[in-house]
Image 1 (cartoon, rainbow, N blue to C red):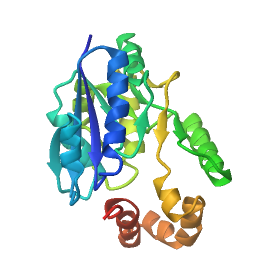
Image 2 (tube, rainbow, N blue to C red):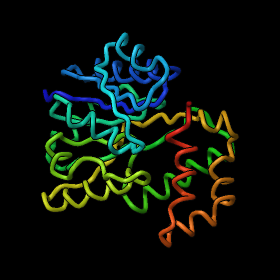
Image 3 (cartoon, rainbow, N blue to C red):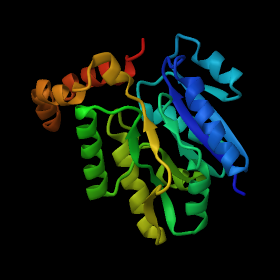
Length: 243
């Protein structure tokens, strides 16, 4: 059985890191093979690293304000044949690692993503869920949990080195590399990513719809090359969240 390394980027995630690791351990037990868990602490000032180590994870550190570089720190240090990534506030279902190993073992897939299901639902979250399903279904660029052999990530240069939308860019790169190898970019069929609703809990379930309307000018300026406003928004929502 091929060994697996699960990469978990974390920025001040003391409330969630043990929960995420427990979900990985449950999936590792179902898989039955060797599974390494790597938590990459990014500018953490809380007990994330301490808790992760107590839960048996290998802890690395990265100070970049770029989630792609944080994930890549874990990928380049990983010992496993297969790389799986998951954000620290999310969880995987028990059959995830077993299904990933099976799909890669068929030789048909270069890698892939996972369907996303929220940990709770309301009307705006159902709408968010629908938007995700439609966009993933149309583009085929499933994200959430990423999975591929380590040599594949090495071949495409790891996660795309950009501050936002790195997930879609990385999915495109994996899909394009798969075409060269005669393989497909896939998606899990029996397992899902359980997506955290913590930002909705903190700022309201209509959060992203409000942000789209309130920052329309910022998005338009970014499309024409002025990213200053967008970078401030990204810092607020992602890189400085959980101070």
